[in-house]
Amino acid sequence: MRIKASFIAVFILISFFKPCYSQEEEQLFLTLEECIIRALRDNISVAVEVINPEIADASLTKAKETFMPRFDISFGNEHVENPSSWWLEQADTVITKDLNYSAALVQQIPTGGNFSLSLYNNKYETNSGFQVINPRYGSSLRLSVIQPLLKNFGFKVSRREIIVARNNLDISVSQFEKFLLDAVYRVQEAYWNLVYSIDNYRVKQQSLKLAQDLLSKNKKEVEVGKLAEIEILNAEATVASREADILQAEALIRRSEDLLKDLLNLTVGEELSPKKIIPLDKPSFDREEISLEEALNKALEKSPDLKMKKKTLETNELDLKVAKNQMLPGLDLEFSYWSPGLSGTEIIFDPSNPFGPPLGEEVHPPSDALKEALGFTYNNWTVGLTLSLPLSIFTTKADYVRAKMEIEKGLLELKNLEKQVFLEVRNAVRDVETNFKRVQAYRVSRELAERRLEAEVKKLNVGLTTNYFVLQYQEELARERSLELNSLVSYNLALARLEKSLGTSLEKRNIKITQFLKE
Image 1 (cartoon, rainbow, N blue to C red):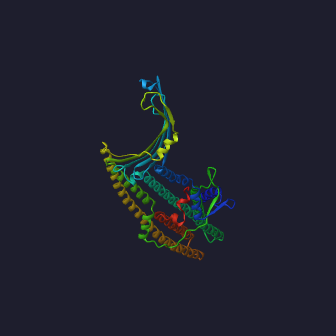
Image 2 (image 1 turned 30 degrees about the horizontal axis):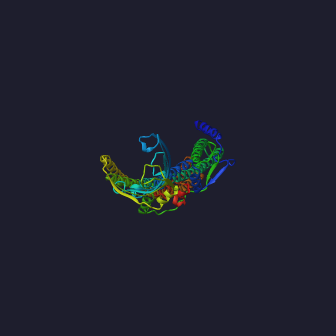
Image 3 (image 1 turned 120 degrees about the vertical axis):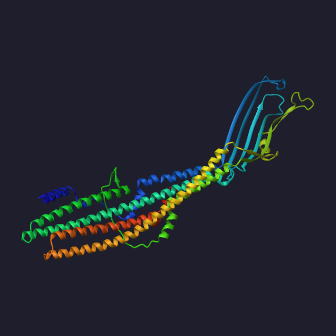
């Protein structure tokens, strides 16, 4: 009676669940490659991660602006009034006006120095007496170069920010590549787990069908008196148990399906889409010959983690060179060349009586001053060296020691990372080989279980065995089928893990990082 009651309870529970794949529900048929493309295109996490390389690219653009020329324009107007300090000024209040404006082109030099080319103009006017030129127009064309010879000298020192920004961009791209590799594997894992859960559901259905057929057969034989009624109860208990297995298999399908929907971003509003995903691909069982040495070389070449670590080491080595350079004394070479020009209203005095009233004036336009400056009428230059011995030599040396230790640490981390990559690749290759053999073994075991069940059914038909053994062999066959399916999916997942370890998942599908990055 307990067995019959449990059977009724399970039957009532099943009645509340719809079939796993109702014909009325909308279905979405997808291959594995379609799922991968959808996930990389629509997944929100991908949209978030792709921003990081774009930020790094913007930082690189900003760093490059250091060597872009700068154009400076200045303007000034000064009005000064002072009481007269002596009689020659010929005014109680001396008023001077100075209007000036200039334009300069400043450029950073890749060797660490800078140069500037400037043009300065001004108009000076005063009411003070005995001025030779009033108002006076002045122009000056100046070229200045400052070049460090020791500290701050060199292409790498001056371009440090650009090199670091470029390395950071490469690191960010490699990090994004690693994320895509992980995303592809997660889709593969979710897809094959869904395939397994659906096939496992069908295996449970087959097992249930066998139990139901045996129950029907037992009822007929009980009616004619060939079997005891207890055989019906045993068969009913088995049917109830396998129907419970069906419920568990359906729940597994829903969980696997929800995980894949989340990766594909299949949503309606904030809820997952009600569409049923129907996988079109089946797990393959093609033997792949894999050389451990070849796989390891490929992983060492393509591993995003190794790429990131090597770029970090490049930055550390650059920091060491810069820190070593900063320990040198400062020795700067300075060179300037300038050409002045002058014009204005020239006041003419009597040479024999310079303190007398002016005899007249000769007006020269402001452009004359500019012509003199641009015509290099007057040549002026200066060359100098400036030696600087900083008192912060101990702090600078500490930076050098720290940079050196960072390199030593980075080399050890790189060596340890290479060991981890080797271990990961070796385990991946081993898993592929092991799971291939598991599939072969479980396939043979499933075939033997089918033969044993077939033989046992024949024995039951002639009365040489009992229902108990037939049910036992049915359970064994269902288990072997599930194990074969599981091993086949595990084999395909092992191949996917190997692809991920080798960093070839994207290349195999012709997926390029540039497809996701903005031009």
